[in-house]
Image (cartoon, rainbow, N blue to C red; front, side, top):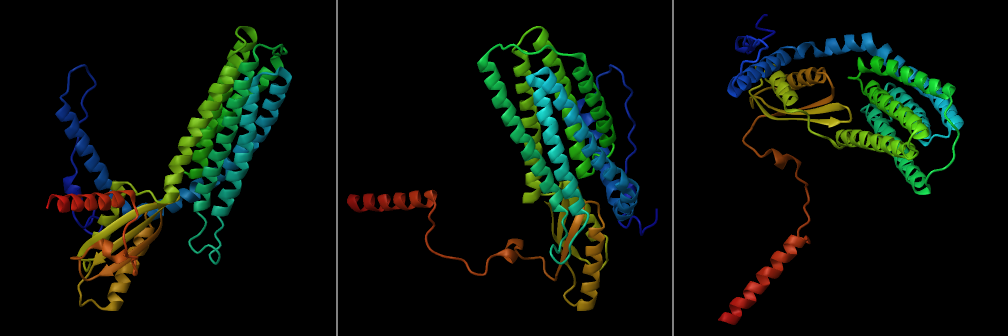
Length: 389
């Protein structure tokens, strides 16, 4: 590796780690911590040195797997449509509440798949005049809408299960083999799609469908078992199974919704990624003296990066512009970075927060409860002092 590829000569700090043999001999906790530290350090160095290749690898990856992701989205939509028809037939012919729960889940899968199909198509077609920074965040909004729809159907299923339990045992038709075979076909189809989407789970659309297919495997399998057991042995296991399915759907998609909500809000990027941005900035050009500030935060699934660099006060405008623009382009070439902003300064002895203070601050007394209690307390102390005198 040349000096250009490794300007700080980080390869010399990589440590060869000998993996301990798997036996019953006790290894000290300190040794395990030390081994873990060197593993993390080696991974960090490899991540730093591979930063310049990320854009090329990302383009190659999209060219190789872009069609597979589209196939996963369209195939999932097609499978969800046919599975909804199959499960609705099974639920109507058997009258099982647990199978009705799986049919309702399949219907919401169909609607949600349509939402993901539309949002995925919108995000891949930017309109620069109406949306200057693109429409990549619409995919995250599609995930949140997906979660909201699944949460609604889960609450409805819990209500229906509670009504069935309150009504008590009722006469229902016996289960037939044909609808059970149909549900078995649905479970097998979901298993195939789950395995396919699992290999593409690093892409947002495929990841959502992977979670959906994984949950449906549990939901349909559990619903089938509860419907059979409830019909043959204990009647209340059918509505109880439907309630358990609804709770699983509710908690799974609610957690996914909150996770994506924080990405829209602007959650901070992992510390390892910020360190990589600092390394790229420091090694970009010798005229960069210091990195004053480096921020990285989510804007949907992608990241925004803000870097403040310090250069010599005598640097010409043309040079500082060329350096900062080339750095901006390099940062935007990192994986998951949507936009990068580079600010050039000549001084680092200043408060970073002062740069974003409002121009006009409204004065006057604060109206918070804490400030009100402080004012009342100070008045009472003054009155006590006056009485004592």
